[in-house]
Image (cartoon, rainbow, N blue to C red; front, top):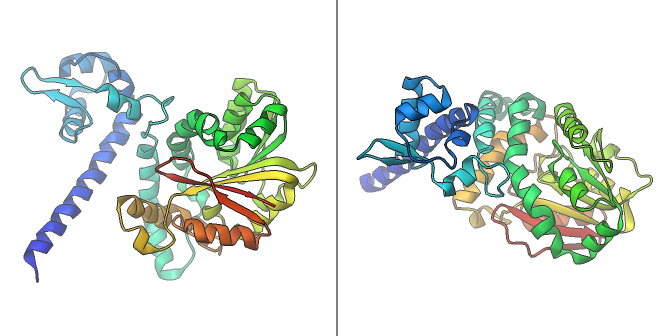
Length: 350
């Protein structure tokens, strides 16, 4: 046995364990509003933060200590002052920022909650259905993905297809399939008021959230329907269809892609956004690949297998994505040149 190699692995293991434990405290800090309270504020001592937040002193001391040791907060040891740097606040407290990451702290506990079900399925078959992850997963996904979609979809992503933007500005029918709580629907509706946007999702909680938000925002060009993707009505058809991190989660991806093609008007465009991944494991042997496979195991793949589905998984890569689209009957498949660390963008038509 190479003991040096073993010690390196032990260090790697404990680093990951530390991250997992710290993220639990980050989840607590998010739920109690600590990051929002500290954002933009001057460095201050524990007594100040107790008074400002109304939190229990002993808990707050331990939370601040955890976050300082982990580098989330800055700590002035000479004066015992804690502060949240502006650069960190953009990721932890400002949910209007495209860099906001704090939704992950709501998703991770939901992922960990699926561990018993995934372990059982690994022995006996089946999986963990999406509904079993609970509302924290629905809301966590919206919080994790929402900032990027709200800010970047119409400013950075769609401008890579100027002809589609021109049609949206003129007014067309749009469907967002697997819309969740409606982030993309609202972004499209606000940017292109002449177009009509319909969001479809099979999850009742997601649709309930989306409809509540639509009512509060008083948008007249949006609507939401609870139905399976295979049941989207073909008439009167759509000129633009989108899916954001949806296809790899589905029970049967190809029938859904086939249905998207059927509801798409002859000159229409389908934008498929999927996780960035190589076509083979050898291309994904890095931290981002590890995250993609882990998410797939605990969420994406298992929710498909729960219903006897294909279990495609998140790391399916561009080659299989194209193969699935062509099998569904699409004639054109192109990867759009959009700079993004998390997602790949595919323009599909024909």
